[in-house]
Amino acid sequence: MAVMASHALMVGFDLDMTLIDSRPGIKAAYLALSAETGAVIDADLVVSRLGPPVEDELANWFPAAEVAAVADRYREIYPTHAIVPTLAMPGARESVAAIRERGGRTMVVTAKYEPNAKLHLAHLGIEPDVIVGGLWAEAKAQALREHGAGVYVGDHTGDVRGARVAGALSVGVTTGPCDADELRSAGADVVLASLTEFPAWLATYAA
Image (spheres, rainbow, N blue to C red):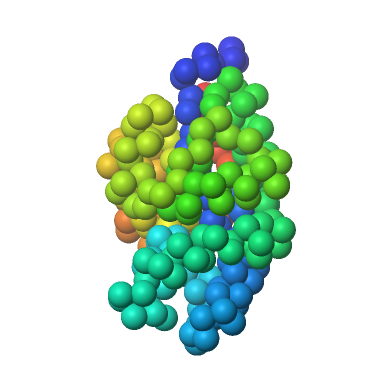
């Protein structure tokens, strides 16, 4: 099969629990935040439902008037606590490589604060062509459309909604808080158990 033109394939990925297992790092960051502020935070519960913006999560543990300031502080201490413990998800590097081998490009679109997203990817040696942070659910469509992503891969129903608004094929992976039925009900076109299945799926899709 001929190599696809570089502009023909742009694949977007979510970050947390799609490309990276950030649970150990985010748990450490929340424990540090709890120690600093005195707030009681169930960090295990927090990392069981990753995806939405940090403000949404902090609203469960802090008064509404404090959330914005605490979110800023969380982002500030995040690099110290969260980068080193975080791991690449199985198949993440291979999935990015499979797209490149077909002459395609990759982008990451995440709700995470963009500088911290870049720190994660650099630490793990995962190098997408484009990284866009601070976008959640339907708002992810802005970046996906801007960069011509035809496929968006994510673990959350919010990722599925973003893909659909962008007119991109939605590929769900069940490595995050949403199971296969939830992803399909939200409108995922394809559901994979993990990114380890992505290169083989991509070969079929590209063909």
